[in-house]
Image (cartoon, rainbow, N blue to C red; front, side):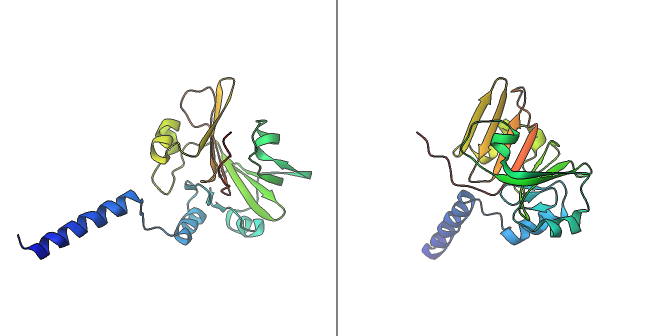
Length: 193
């Protein structure tokens, strides 16, 4: 084999290894956002879910998805993790209103006029990376890793929080299933002490 071809093949192999190691999937943030807005079963950590984008004005979202089935407003802002789930964590996602969409099987959390989180209990959701929530928490951790995963245990329940990805997953009964997801705007990892 000629030396020039050897160098070319070696470079091609290193380029393929580099691309695989850095999980290049070709989808830009704009493409992912567009997919979320048009796919009720797509759940993109840190971007949105159930056709709702994080950070978008709630009127834009409602124009696309229709009016919610139920709405609750609060005089003071509340924290999803402390006030709703009742867990002790320094992770804070404030909201002053929530809208429940039975048809989309989700609840949308609004703060001011912006979507700050989307939650749901339907495991028939898939991430842009092809991870289906129905496969359970072990499969999710296998695909996304446990580097930035904070696990909060409460009796027989567990909450897995990926702050920098912008997703939390609850396993009620510690049976390996994903019983609740919350997609939120990514935050810096917790300071470990």
